[in-house]
Length: 74
Image 1 (tube, rainbow, N blue to C red):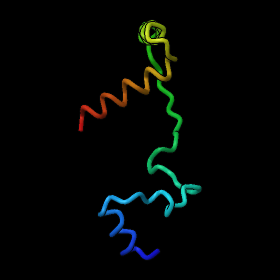
Image 2 (cartoon, one colour):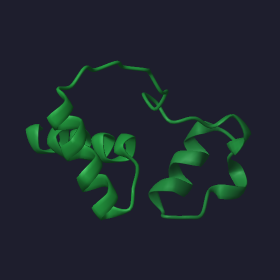
Image 3 (tube, helix red, strand yellow):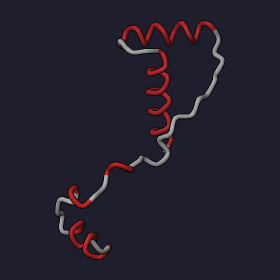
């Protein structure tokens, strides 16, 4: 399919899923990168308390909170 035909179908709101190859699809800037951060013990204890209350891991809590703050900053 030529790009112009693809654009026309897209602009018309047609379903393009059959025209796409998802086997090599990737999300930009979604690669994981390891970051080490040292916190005082009281911060880690607070994180653990909140994570337990929410039923998630400390790492998940930190990721969620940082992502929320970054969205607010935009």
